[in-house]
Image 1 (cartoon, protein in one colour):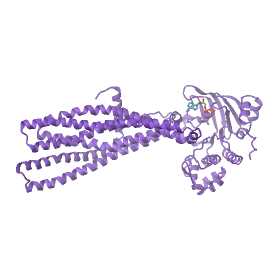
Image 2: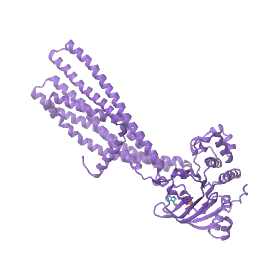
Image 3: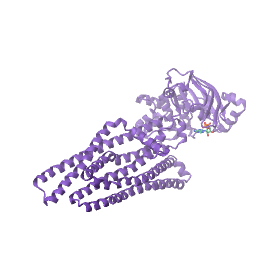
Image 4: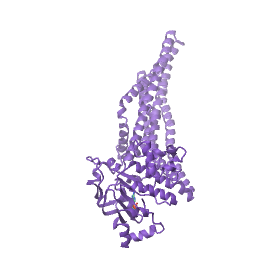
Length: 588
Ligand code: ADP
């Protein structure tokens, strides 16, 4: 083994991969035991064959006694071999597949913990590919080959011991070729590793292109981008194919090379037999033994390629597992249990990378108050509100909930205080009732219906074929924009959080829908501490305080009337944004 950094790193990946099997060592040992049984009984066939042949040679025919012994031994050995074969394969593959399952669960768990920053940086298709395809690559290698890893060495050891016992000079002569087999195996192993790593990366790109095209299908069609998407997809498919073929070439080439070397190994044996006048039976048994040993050598060399392949996948998996989580709970984080009194931003600064997005933002929102944020697109409104549930941590200053720094609270207890209604309503492929109850454990049907009523959603839900048990699509495709929004509002009402973050959609709704959504929102916002990104004039009019953001700074503060009177940024924005919006009908 060389010890350049690349192969050291590779070894670290293997060690880590095998460390996943640690909890299952007893099963591995049991598998090994059956592997030895398999190897032993396979090699045990050799003396039986030799006996058989030598008797033939001596007598011309078998004696009855020998026939009976052989007749008894043959099935016994094959039964033992069969049990060893079955049980070792079962045990070892169990461990392999279990390791893959553990790995998948760990990956998903880690993915759930990663901060939002990670998801805005990476493509979800590529992430999905790591969790499914890369683990599948390991699973395939495991199912096909790992049984061999434990069984075949024993066949090899059995075979070698037998031929050494038979004739050690001859054994040495024939074994000379085996070390030579390592050369092509190592060479192809390196090739396979590189090709597999690239192939998995291209496969992940393929998944990403697919995912983007599927989720953006409306846009793809509307802009006539089918050809463009097809080209992108085909390019990745082609690249994946060519890498897969590289692996196939290596796999296909390894066997002929080993056969050739094994045949070359037989040549000196032939001459030796000729010179020493070796008995034919002995020579034939010797060849049978060599043939038998050729199997494990072939399998182990393919196994090496499979390990290279799966370590390329493991590398990608560990890369994801090693991505720092970003937002974490401090070791002494406390549960937030008390009633919300206020949220205070104190000189808050934030940067996604290096460029500052928010600077010196200070504001306080009292319990039960509603504040609105306005500002041109890119001013930092979404960023600002996403700091409250700690999707990101502030990079300067601090945010307090009552008197506690958000970073001193557990994320779970903090987020339990917060409800979010965002522009994009995410509905899951589940029933209406379960969609409303998402995030509220053990909600009763009555509570769900009550929330729906208050969100002005009960009527349209009741008209659905199966009412609350109707399954709605992944993105709620069978619902109108207004209906989706009202379901999201019902979800927030049911969860009943003291703090509400509102970034409601501006999508044009017909007057009736608009009125229903507005009524639902009023119901939701009542008695809560609300931070709203104001898209509606009505939200603004009802806000206790409006903060006008410009390039990450609060530039104006006041009520709607005060800010209009100021005749500054707000007035300009207001005229631009709400010029055509009719003034809302006063609520209540
Ligand atoms: P608004 O909600 O007011 O439109 P945002 O808070 O979405 O503004 O964005 C503020 C700035 O932060 C923009 O310049 C935007 O490009 C940048 N930004 C938003 N999200 C990210 C992100 N995940 N990574 C890097 N920059 C971002």
